Image 1 (cartoon, helix red, strand yellow):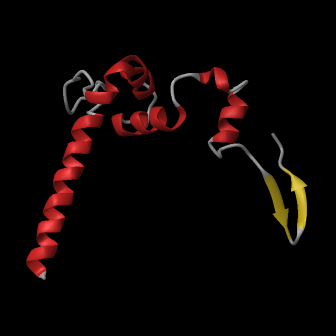
Image 2 (tube, helix red, strand yellow; image 1 turned 90 degrees about the vertical axis):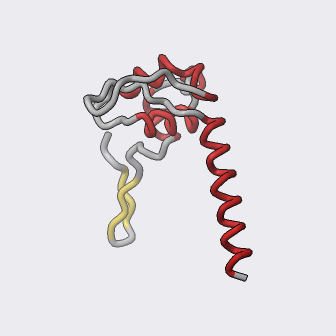
Length: 106
């Protein structure tokens, strides 16, 4: 049984590697640790957007990839930055304390 489970884990590792190759690697940030590399795979069309996002302090290649995969690059669907923040769950909401609801200040 252990051999069966180990074989299954090896198969899953191979599948994960295939998916990672298909998605590609961003590698466009100009960090001091490594040289900038052109994105590969499905990330290649988003080189400019990844480069722009990684110019923000705290945004790594991985985070930029996640942002693009979740939100996309077409911001026209969001009428304002507040709409985007609300969609992402980052907008201030309501304050509730002791069962009383108060509107949050903006």
